[in-house]
Amino acid sequence: MPELPEVETIASQLRERGVEGKEILSVKVNWAPTIEPYTVAQFSSAVTGTTIDQISRVGKWMLFALSSGQTLMVHLRMAGSFAMEQGSHDRIIVKLSDGLTLYYRDTRKFGRWKLVDDPQTILSKLGPDALTRRFTLAYFSEAMKKRHRMIKPLILDQGIVAGLGNIYADEALWESKIHPERLSDSLSDAELAALYKAIKQVLKLGIKNRGTSLGGGKTNYRQVDGDSGGNRGEVKAYGKSGKPCVRCKKTLEKIVVAQRGTTFCPACQVT
Image 1 (cartoon, rainbow, N blue to C red):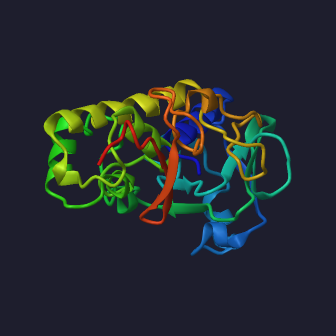
Image 2 (cartoon, rainbow, N blue to C red):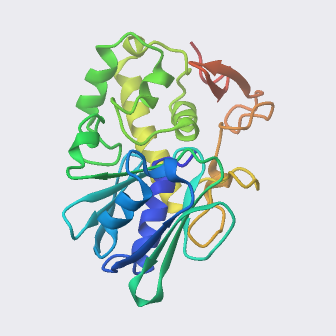
């Protein structure tokens, strides 16, 4: 579930807590598939003794640049998170210098860690990060117009734009008044500009509010300190099927678009 705002929040909080600059003293792996194709011994040998020089983010990937020259790339997938206190479902435990410990927990076990020599082997397959200068209106408009696909799955395609997931896609489409099943090449220049603006707007708001948590379950997103994200009160569409649209008061509906649950306003977001 963690999308761009949630990953950015976690990366920022790890930096704030001084993880950058710390040496990796030891690694304990409790769920080996997380680090495949490395074995636990290979992975531990490769990272132990290195320093975490920098923590950054591209799309939904979190990047730990190591002093060895390699980069540890972490994708949280459905329910991955980091904490600095022990908890249940800790899949990897990283002991750091100065008494710090980093706990990677993942109730669903879908998250993956990739230790690579060159991050571009993975990042080159992504489209522009939605909050970088590379993601321009000109690029976005051309990418949408030259394809004949439903708009929601298209903006979820990480090869087109990196960072959006189900929550923020629904929010951006609601904000721009575009039906999720509209074909991308049917959108006018004004509609594309509105959607482009909305994508940036909802992602920045998500970051400002430290991510979106919509429930209290174990698989729900948590910040590094265990708190829920504060963006729940800003969500206008996602997960609100059956409730009134805050814009027009009509009842929000839920449909399935490209195998993804999708909430929209049938009055505001017309086909």
